[in-house]
Image 1 (cartoon, rainbow, N blue to C red):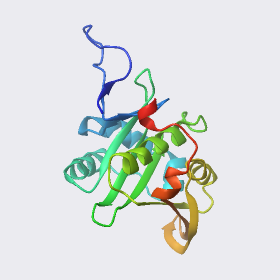
Image 2 (cartoon, rainbow, N blue to C red; image 1 turned 135 degrees about the vertical axis):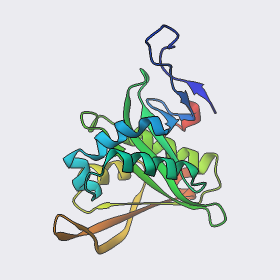
Image 3 (cartoon, one colour; image 1 turned 120 degrees about the vertical axis):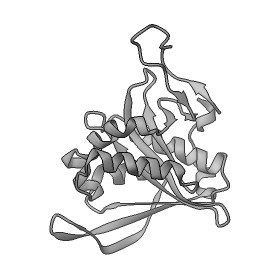
Length: 200
């Protein structure tokens, strides 16, 4: 499903609109490209994101190389999250895809200044609909720090249930952190009372 999102960029000096791979009611998903490296790097360098996701800022070249490597990975799909006016507000990915077992993992990162506005839930809902509505997935998983309340809330709103805790699974800022493990099964997604991405 390919649609345009936002205003046309046919005037000189205006950025051309991004081609969408997928869309939902309030956000669109465009395939992540190497040209997005600087933007993603700025988001990953944000102290809040670094703490909640558990990494330290890397050089821009490392971010670009990682995006290039991920583009070649057939077991993952990475998307830039766009508002209707084409403003990029985050990154969402469906990774570790195993089409035989029907399993995959979701990852989500929002830009500073765009958190707490429902964009994370909308993007997660969209990529979940992609996994279950267009791909043969049966089980999706996600992990986050047990004290990352915003992420815990987004996962719950999107229908994920907490499966358990990976104790001391992450080393960050000199101490071990527990990771909350969430999952969503296809029958649970089928029972969710919300519009699907293709109904947008």
